[in-house]
Image 1 (tube, rainbow, N blue to C red):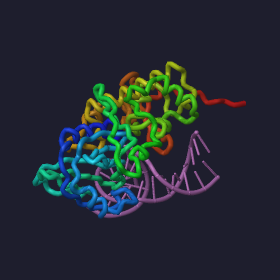
Image 2 (cartoon, helix red, strand yellow):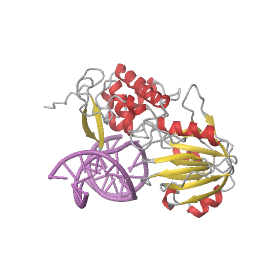
Image 3 (cartoon, chains in turn cyan, blue, purple):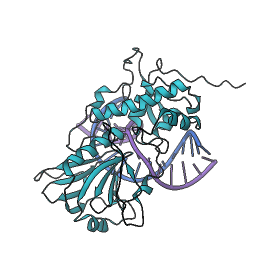
Image 4 (cartoon, protein in one colour):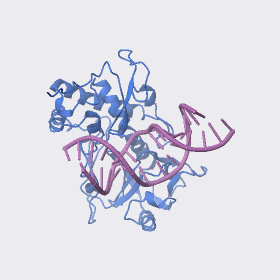
Length: 304
DNA sequence: ACGCCTACCTGCTTGC
DNA sequence: TGCAAGCAGGTAGGCG
């Protein structure tokens, strides 16, 4: 569910709401939410008494940095949500892990489909990001542990909103791949944080067909896609995320970006640019929406 | 490198 | 109304 803009929204909400808060205790209601091989009981013992220093994001994962340098990672996957509940809020049947804060509030990890995972790592070697308004990347203090949290993300591609993600760098990466644009945008090792919604939106904005192969793009097309990817993500953040069914911010409120989507789940509805009906196809087992007029079909290589 | 499949889970919508 | 099938924002692992 949540892609970069939704995760960024949650991280920012939590930074304001729980930075400085101490975790008294935790309850695990669904063991598999705790990332293997950490047994849930040990996780609880290790998190109890910790204080949250700050909250950031890397790719689609929320990072809760603890005072002692350790980092708790929360990968929301499809239906995960982190919600701050004031004292006295009725229990949530879908809360898989509940953190009791010292001030009486609860930080709840809610996840209907149970795909999400929570991990606890010694710090070190990680560059996390603040995506917004010129926020700078920050280095996590070196933790004394044997493992580095940075290794968790070693296989991830660049953060599209960082200044270092230039059109030139994007062009270079694209030129070495022959995969379909849609599949590549979803590949977290190619670019971090883009999911099914924003991939479709970016391709529409850049007027590129989802089946185009990456190495077929002209320089101009690469620039359009670069701008489009960053643009749709920034717009998503500005609107506090796209709530299609169950995404909510840490305040429990849905985001406003769903109404601003141009193609995602707008099958058969008119394209905002040309009026043509939006089509839905399946690419890499993921539903894909595009305008057949604005986003021209790649020329079939008539080999003969 | 790439594509395709299966899993992991539950709930909601659609069609008969 | 009931019931089954299809769909969902993500990703890991396996196979060819």
